[in-house]
Length: 313
Image 1 (cartoon, rainbow, N blue to C red):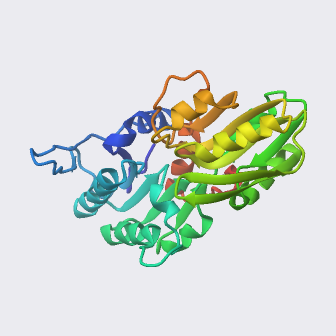
Image 2: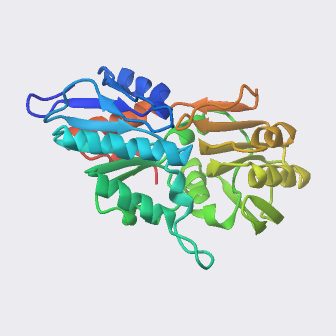
């Protein structure tokens, strides 16, 4: 795929090669050749091993571990601009700093805005990402942002599961808009969990707003990090009489005790996209690929076609 004037080239950071290879297969294009030598002190130097002059370059890289992977992405963008690429698009399946979208206490940074500024300063022309923790982060960038949604993948999958008494749940009040989208598209009821936090990554208390008795509950969220909220919600719903509880989340961060918590919880299955690499072989944890969705978004951006028709809101 490509044009004579601005050929399409797709490259990957070291953290996301597994996904980028699937994207290239979906588009039937070759993965761009690049390298990233690492010096003895840990410094690294991304390098393109083929000409990209005049090319429309897409660089795929999720952020975690955030410091190293984001810096690698910034260096790859800078290298592409200095190698005379026509356009440089950052494809960030998981943008981890999206949780730092505001000052929720004194004397802290707004990390999402800073990262957006760094990417803009490096020279990106566009961003493609998925399920930002907060939608308003699109406004932090001074370049166009194509914000995709895992619901486009999850909703058709859920509809084929054949759950008779399906109910969609939000694990917190902040996720009600997302849960409402699923409930509306699947034409089912919705319940909400109300939680309070003692501190970051630690849930203090939780209650369920709505009826889950004899229901097949699916909890939807943008990410699962330490799995404290999602497992507490699942256990509570099971206690309230739910027949089964499953979870769908775009990003499986799964840090700290997350996998152990999922294994011990009432969750029967947990589904993620492959925006981040698998961290477990647990029978409960399953992955659905977003390679085709990202590939189609890349193709449409490259062809200057609309992508809004591709995704549920």
